[in-house]
Length: 333
Ligand code: SAM
Ligand code: SF4
Image (tube, rainbow, N blue to C red):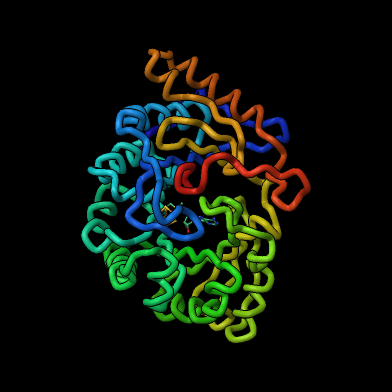
């Protein structure tokens, strides 16, 4: 366990929010093509040498932890498990003593869950948007539902507890499966988290009408399996537990109930760009600094300046909202 040295100082933005959570995208590539994220064809991948190396990622992460007291890191993508030797990176970051998590589509976990757990990964979120094979194939443009279900079970067997299953709810697409997912979570012993559809899809099909508000999701489940709301921390998910003791659900209401006022996240894209917000329209080029021989002080200053310039919130529902140029898989969800 790394001891955070005395020089750790909080990274507070202009709105008093202290940042302690770093989201790192390790690749922009993916073996799925989810309709709410990527286009069916035509993604242009970053050349390999534009991706940060494990050593570069570790250096940025170490600075965030040691200089600014970050205590939580999540690996994402693209699909992070398609980056070769991912457990090696997990072991490097685990040595920093942070809460280390991964978001994955689950398709490779049957073979990787154990190795990731052994390497020091603390928590895992697996994305799954339909329990019906035909709909799963339409949504992901891949026929891999059995593999993802196997991956969820492999994660449970490897010792991750709780395993969280992320469901992006899109009106008219999978909103008729909300209660099925609640039942699935109760039966499998996993925590299902329902995420509102966000305007980050490469196909630009998002509209406010396609968003199912979190409150409606909670009401639909609560009508079948009574729920009690739990108090909220800095976690973007609003948590509700089943009154009969069969676990809990989470809802992430980015659009209908933005949680920007308690945001504590910074994001590093696979090509080394630092973003203060998922919806940010500007980025800080850390890769250029890293490869130009920047000192730790210069890198830390860049991190601090990016956070200092963070806006109050994304304003998705406000007139004049501008989508970022990159879609979800290129930013890292
Ligand atoms: N490939 C991994 C996966 O699917 O879990 C990690 C990357 S993915 C971009 C991270 C998360 O973002 C997933 O839970 C995914 O469902 C979610 N996501 C992608 N596009 C989204 C959108 N337009 N709105 C809401 N969530 C989205
Ligand atoms: Fe790939 Fe994840 Fe995007 Fe689906 S949501 S296309 S699995 S990056």
